[in-house]
Structure formats: C-alpha cells, structure tokens
Image (cartoon, rainbow, N blue to C red; front, side):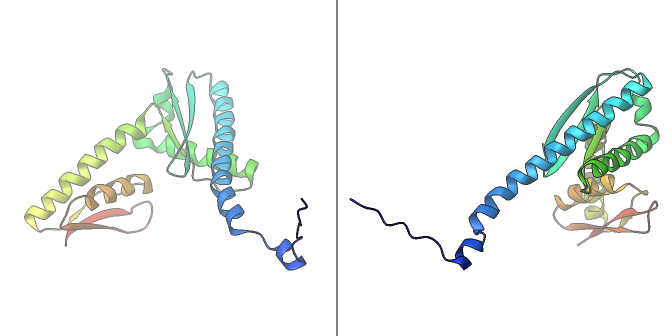
Length: 182
C-alpha cells in the first residue's frame, strides 16, 4: 500500500495558519508576564537587600497583568508611604526596570505589605456607599483626587449599583471621580 504525499504550493507554504498564531498568542503573553514578574522580583530583591529590609516576594499573573507583592518585613510600611505615594513610585521604577530588560512597556502591579488589597476594600465600600447616596438623594457627588488605581476601583464599585454612573474629571494629579444619578 502506498501513500501519496502532496507538498504544499509555494503560496500555501509561506502563509501562516490562523490556528498556530492564535494558539501561540496566549502562551506567549503568559510567558512574557512570567518574565516580567521574574525581572521585577529580581529588581525588588536587590532593592530590599540595599535597604537591608526583610520581605518575601510573591509573583503571580492576574487579569493579564504581572502582580508582585512583598510581605513579611517589619519596615515595609515605609515603602508604602503616605497614601501609597512611595509604593506608586516604586511600582513605576519597577516597571521601568522590566521595560529596560524586556523592551516592552509593563502594566505590572506592585503591592507592599497588603496595602493595595486593603485599599481596594476601602475604596469598594466608598464607591458603593457613594453610589447608594447619589441614588437616594439624586445629587451628584465629587470625590477627592485619586490615583488611576483608586479611580478604577471606584468606577467598578459604582458600576455595580443600578441607576448611577461615574466619570473622571480634571487633570492629574487632581483627577477625581464624579458620581451621577442615571
């Protein structure tokens, strides 16, 4: 029994198949995010060593973004700063270190001593109670200026309440969320 093998034409051979591109894309993204986390972890480990701070570095990938958290050290609160200002600066420096190594702009999220997780809970509650108040009174409410991270959480919490919506207004660093009755 003989088999006939037909070789693809020149045009067919040079065309990439849609299946191979789409199948490799998610794993490439995952690989890049893991690489970002590794680079960030190394950078932050060297920083902690320079400062002589203790801390455990945890790397993860959540919602299409590398997430790095540092926990366990006594002095870590100093790396958060007033209202997370030092944390925001360290996150930006870490993103730049990742970009320098990978050549790709990073959306990496950094959390230190659980500050972002706790802040997320506070802001979710603030967004929900503000939305419920606006729904009840009909009066729009402007919140104090917030970082993009904080505004995103407020917008998400407001969106979960039927009959209200939110928008951001102003320029950085004074950009704030306004909640309206729909």
